[in-house]
Image 1 (cartoon, one colour):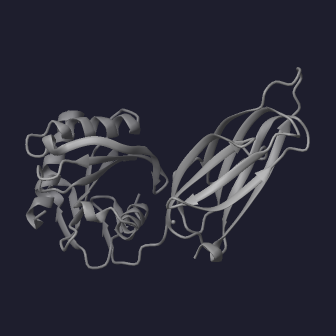
Image 2: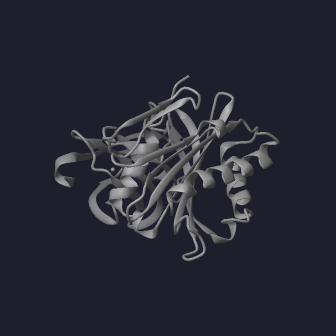
Image 3: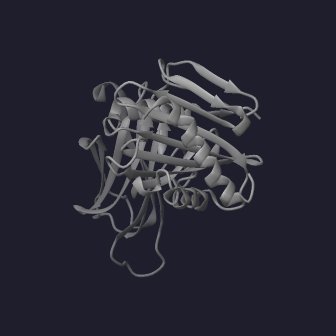
Length: 309
């Protein structure tokens, strides 16, 4: 990926947008887990116990139901895993297994004191912080895996701040990265030009009246049609909701076909709204960038974004 390609890519993204809109994470040091429960006594005869769902969240209500679902957490935030179950008895055993980067580091079992239906809240608590990385919680009922949920914990970015009133946001980007901007087009790019090459491009555009998930998929579908690099875009590998500066956002991870594009081998697309604008964030890089060191930097940079008004 050459320096000049970053803004060229951003301008291509602007064209896509205009066509769409009509305009323009030390284990031992760190973490405690616990569980809390609420129950409702069933009114009918007991049925087979069932786990309905697990939701990772930044907060729960008095019944331990998730109130702030999330897939990305800061390293000083408590992670709640709210499990909804029904028709359980005192003999039923619920178990939560926590994994970091694919390695099991904690398991906790719980049985309710009375039969019923309700929620149990398994917690991952910073003490003082949770190590940054990719996590998964698995919920077992009587030894059988029922549901699982992945999430990510990010650390703080230590690096320079970029702030721009016209673009309406500020961001901390990794130390040593270059900044390129084209304010006529409401575009800024941040790039690491040594191996592996990585870039983050952020485009501001006029709002589109569709849900943020639909917006992200529309952008992805249109990008695949681009004559310059669309043929290099491969399959979606992961996707889900995140939060940026208090706003809902949607993130799509996708493959890039090696050898077909100067823009790299893997990519991430993020879409979010703020007031009367939407923001398109594109992360592209060579395959070597998909290691914890770089993904932690990128995730922390994105989560450092703060809208100015």
